[in-house]
Image (cartoon, rainbow, N blue to C red; front, side, top):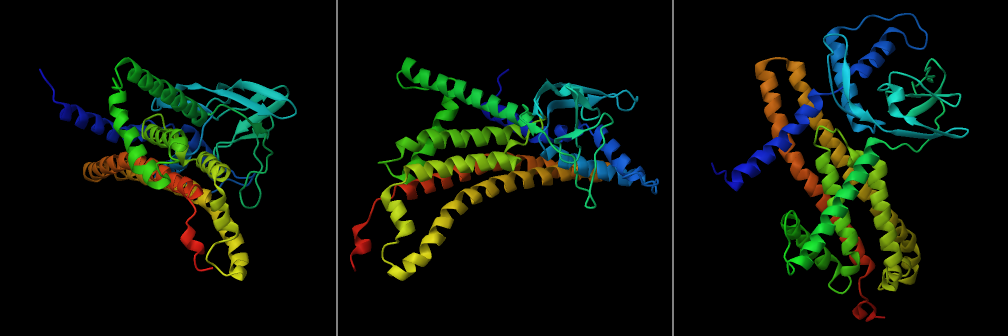
Length: 389
């Protein structure tokens, strides 16, 4: 029986579109429920408050889980089972926890028991706060102190842990290295013809070169930036795609990651810029001298705003997409009927397909803007700018 290529492509696209639904369905909300219950029943030692209805608790759990999904984690949680029987089991694997607090502390995240226990190391006690997913110094009971604004006042150790975001970054880096190394080797073995997965990625590489790098940087200078442009494009694209899988990673939804990518772009732009670039910033041609003095600090500030806009654009778009998608999926549980849940599923399915497109689009936009900045840094001097002086 023969299956057409279009049928296979449609099947693969359908699988990717449905994956976020299973991401939410397999969510571990046990610790979230316990945290929410603890806050409702007894907060800061006060007397027990009014018991909240099960529906309100469920809504709070879903909202807390959506927020938790956007945060980094010290372990990889795949799914849970046995909650109905009262003996819930979690399937996943722990990651190394590396802390510095009056010395080095090293242990596996399984010591936290999915955030429900306190970890002890060399006489120090550490616990994970469910609100922000960060590790804090605490006592043997896992006490968290809060101020009047409900902000945690416990001190934090220096956290150098290998979190799931870091694991995904290393995995994508290794994947890219192996994949493109094999692509390079295939050119040598087959007379400049790509084989295997390289046949899929080769047109994309040529597109980045011919439609992004050369038009924005120019044929004279684009080659020295191609390695960075290709790395940024595929790095962001792959991470965005993994964020739509049941692994539950949201690397590009972490502002520290997007800021690091933008800072690298800024540093490359700054240290490879020619004198004409700096001349336009500090002594803009064709402008009266007094205005040049006024415009110089504004132009200099503009160079700093560029990486900031890169950071916020990628971060905000990915976070917004995850929040909207997870909220729509949560509606299936809220309606709890065939009509409402069915409509939410269809809407989530359509949005998931859109998110697949957005994953590539955000990689394209980031790479395009990066190429524009590189192009402005290497723009040649035009003599007609000073002709009227």
